[in-house]
Length: 170
Image (cartoon, rainbow, N blue to C red; front, side, top):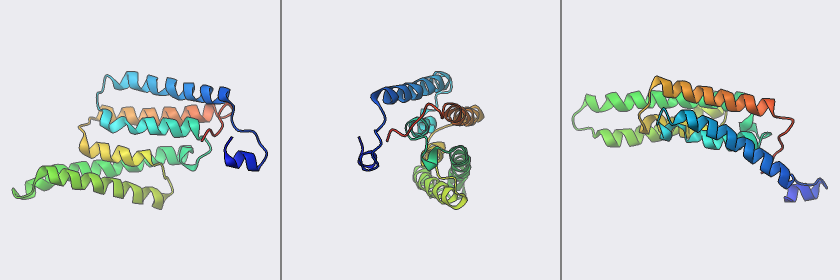
């Protein structure tokens, strides 16, 4: 039992609930990864593992709410795309600019920009900052973006549909 559960006299989540919700997260991510295997852009979609954990282990957390989950990925995606394109054209402005260094700097900027936009727009979802980073550091296609969008919508829908079965485990 956690200290918060002890202090209010409520029993903590049962081992059975831990197992059920962990299995739900497992099934969700296996389904996503089976499709992902065809896309092969794992640096971009690894954030989905963290999103799945938040949605199934901490469903009452602010970052598990659909508005923040989906909004965070939209913002993270936009920040990542902007910085990815900048990383592609900035080195062309001057031959003295090292493309690798530009990519690293813009990857950091993508995380900072995504973070700033998420808190400003109140759609905080930390794994979405990882998505922004991945878009700058990894190759991607439109099908990758569509896949991540679909996966985030599916995780959010599963969390909503299964909310009567879910409790905060962490």
